Length: 215
Image (cartoon, rainbow, N blue to C red):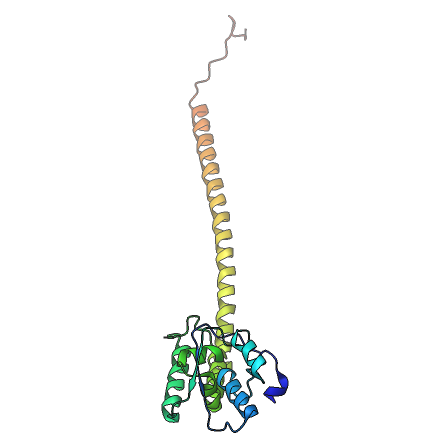
């Protein structure tokens, strides 16, 4: 199938210096060799050339392997060790404490980088990849009960903000009234003082002509 597709895999190119291990156990002819090298570089069903000319093109880059890179014979696998390594890598990514991943993004590509395992090895443990994705979904989901609490908290925060605005407006109004009362009290005090001064004025007697007649 990969030999028929003969197209660039739908994933980013690996950085230079990558190492790929070729599993030669199933190589019996030319086609099986190209299938094996395609899977070594690009995982199950991967493509990396279907004849010498196509292989030469792939070796120059553009098919996920960026020169310089190394293709070597595969050493015997320890599947339990691989699974432990992959689980530990998933734990570090989900905890936000990666060791190898520079971006720390919660993607399968970064899981592969963090584990330090080959791409085909990781995809061979598809149940652990699915487990990582399920844990990611659970980590990013919010239980309904907790969501209700969050919504209530947001509503209360909004009401508190509105109450603070009303209180600030009332305080401003109180300050204006207090100033007005102070000014009125001062004016009233001045009026009392002026009235008191008026009451203390001595009236002059009205003048009379001789004989008791008013002048």
